[in-house]
Image (tube, rainbow, N blue to C red; front, side, top):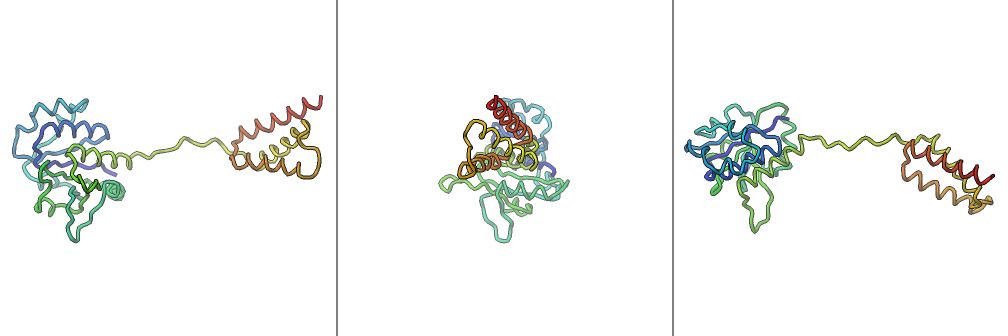
Length: 236
């Protein structure tokens, strides 16, 4: 999966851009474009103040004059909006993350509107898919940098395959039989098991606890050794 290009349409606040650079750095994004007629926007003091350890991204950001120019080389363009448009696919950040994994190595863009009005009709007409953050109805609008953070997190999560540490080798059936035999020897030696009746069932009950615990080979070996030592010492 290719990481998206973040496209910021007509941003008004340089502080937001600095915070966005930091969020991108947090989650491994590096390609971003600002669509703005104001060449001084990228010189705002707020950029450096909030772009903690993301100065390289401030140097690499591009400014262009139109959305068309920003996404010209992108095969898939996703616009972020709370609006519903008939006939247009609308997905959450998590669903978008899953869809992006199906795009192979295609270059794609994730487009954010300005802080006040978001994306307008013309902007959305250039987007192939729409995405929204399912926030509370009482306050559905997020700050621009916050919205970028949500998407960056979800996208980075899908890129990183979270692998659990390898489990130790499980005990074999033969190993478990040895545990069962040694368990009976040890319990018999200390007088816990004496007859053929209910006391014998107690051995099975105790052994079944170990089976449910899914002993590793090492654990089965330790149980076997411990019970055999117990039986040997009790006999002397």
